[in-house]
Image (tube, rainbow over all chains, first blue to last red; front, side):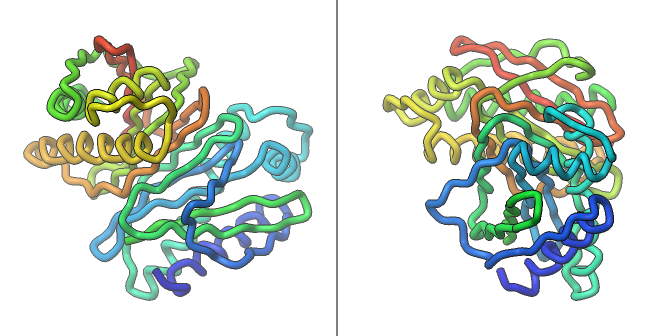
Amino acid sequence: MNVEFVNPFLEAIAEVLLTMAQTECKPGKPAVKKDSVSFGDVSGIIGMSGEKVKGSFAISFSKSVILAVTERMLGEKVTSIDSTVVDLVGELTNIATGGAKKRLAENDYDFELATPVVVSGEKHEIVHVSKAPTIIIPFTSDVGDFFVEVSFS
Amino acid sequence: MNVEFVNPFLEAIAEVLLTMAQTECKPGKPAVKKDSVSFGDVSGIIGMSGEKVKGSFAISFSKSVILAVTERMLGEKVTSIDSTVVDLVGELTNIATGGAKKRLAENDYDFELATPVVVSGEKHEIVHVSKAPTIIIPFTSDVGDFFVEVSFS
C-alpha cells in the first residue's frame, strides 16, 4: 500500500474535523501496525470494496478526546459516550471515508463504502484481518491524540 | 429488510460452526434492535456493498463461548482472547458472510464483501450506523449463547 492511497484519508479527516468541530489536527508518520496494540474507547469502522481494492478503515478516539470534539460540534457539555456521540463518530467515519473515496476515484481507485459500525467499550482493540498490512496513523490535536488505521489489499 | 435476506446468514453460520467446530447452534427469533444494548467480548465485523444493498454484519461472542469454540476447532486449551482467537473470529466472519453472499447472489442480491475487522474488549457495544434497522439474531449452542447483527439498506 502506498502513500498515494493513505494520504486522501488523512486529508479528509483533517478537513472534516476542521469544518465540523473547528479542530485542527495533524497526522503523524504512518507506520505498519505489527505487534503493536492500540486501544480506543470509541471507534468508527467501515468496510470498502471495489474491483481493485478491498479493505477496512477505523478511526479510534479515547473518551476524553471524543467528548471534547463532540462538545465543539454541538456547543454543549457531554459527559459520556452516549448515542449522540456514537452517531457523531459514525457520521465522521462516513464523511472522512466518503471524502477519501472521492479523491481516490480521481486516481482510478474506485470502491464502494459499506455502512459504518461504531464500537464503544473501554480500551477495545481492533485487528484488521487481511493479508495486507494495516497502516496506523497517529493524529495530534489541541484536544488530544487519536489514531486511524487503514488496511487495503 | 425481509427474512429472505437474513436467513442465508443464519444458515451459513450454523454450517460453518458445525463443520469447523463440531458445534450445533440454533438461531432464535430475529428482532429489530431498538433500544436494546448487546455486549460482546470479541466481535467479527464486516462491511458489504453492492448495487442494491449496502450494510454491515457482526457476530459477537462472550469470552467463554469463543474459547470453547476455539478449543473445539484447534483441539487444545485456550485461556485468553489472543491472536489465534482473533484470527479465528475473522475467519468465521469471512466464511459465514461468504456463504451468505453466495446464497444471496442466487436470489439476485449481489454485493461485495470488505475485509473483516475483529474487535476485542470486555463488554463492548456495537452500533450499526444506518437508516436501515439492525436485525439482531440470538443463537444458542451447547457451549453457550452468542448473537449476530445484520443491517442492510
